[in-house]
Image (tube, rainbow, N blue to C red):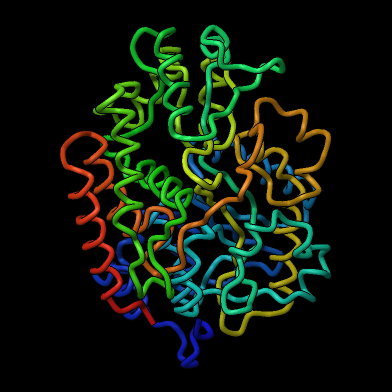
Length: 447
C-alpha cells in the first residue's frame, strides 16, 4: 500500500469532502454546533491547558463516556477538558473533517478503526511514534493484538484502540435451560456447524412456541452485513482486496452464506423475516425469543429489562470459527504548527482514558487495554463475552469505502437483507452486492 498522502500534498476541503460524497457541505452547516466549535473554526485561541475531545457516543455509551470524562476532570483539575459529542456516523466524520481542514481540530478524537483509511490517506491525522507512546506507558504488546494491528497503516501507527466488540449471540438462560441447551456450568453448548446451529434454534422454538431468535432485518443494513461478512469469512471468503480495488466476493460462498440466513427466516422459520432492529430488541427483552444476534453494545439494554441472559461470540457455522469485529479508537487530528505541549496533553488524556476503560466495559465493549482486560474487576463483570472466536476475528476489509456506516456496508447489507426477508433470491443478492462493490471499486479514492 502506498504511504499515506505520499504526494506530500496537504488535505484540501474540496478533495476530502468530494471523496466522502459530501462536496456540497458548507461550513455554514456548522451553525447548529456548539458555540465552542464555532469559535474554533474561526480561529479563536483556547487556553494552553485546554484539551478538546470530539466523539460520537450517544445512548448508554454516551453516559459511560461522560462518567469517564468526569473522573478524568476530577483527577486533573488543572486541565480544561472540553468534550463535544456529534451525531453518529457521517455527520460526525464531516464535522471532524471540517474542523481539521480549518486547522482547528480537537486535540483528540474518536475514530472507528475500520474507517481509518480515508482520514489517513487524505492527511487528516497525525501518526503516533513508538517513543511518544512509550513515554506514556503505551506499547503495542499491551493491547488486544487484532485491534492494534487494525490501527497500523503503511507501517505507521495512526490510532490507539479503545475497545473491540465482535458479533455476539445473546441467549436467554431460562429458555435455553428448559430447551436442554446449557452445559453443567450453565453456559450455552455452542453449535459447531450449520446443522447443530439449526437444531439449537429448533429446540428453543419448541419452548417459546413462536420464535427462537431475532436480529434486525428491515432497515438494519449494518447487522445484515455483519452476519453475512462473518459467514463468508467462516467459509474462507473475502469481499475486496488490494485496498478495495479488486472485488473478491465469491459466488458460491456468497450463496452459501445467504442460503443459511434464509434458512433461519424463510425455511425453518425460527427467526422473523420482517422485523427491524428495535423490534428484534423488544422480542428478546420481552423473553419471546431465546437468542438475539448483535454486537455486545446492547448488553445494558437487556440488563435494564432484567432479562436472564448471557452472551458469547457468534458460533461456528462453517469451516472456520471467526466473527466480524470492530473497534473505537483515539486519534490525533493533524494541526499545522501544533506544539509538543499540545501533543503531550493529548497523550496524557489518551492514557487516562485507557486506564478508565473498566467503566467503558460495563456497556458490553471489550477493553483493548490488556491491564484492564486482565483485571479481576473486569473478570467479575457479568455478563460479558464468555469466549472469543477460536480462529480469530475479522475487521472490515481495507478500502476507502469500507467501515462502520460505510457504502460497503450499505451495498452488501441491503442486498443480503432483501434476500433474508424473502424479497429476492440468493443469486440476485449476490449480483446486486457484486455490482455495487464494483461500482465502489471503480470510483477514485479521495486523495
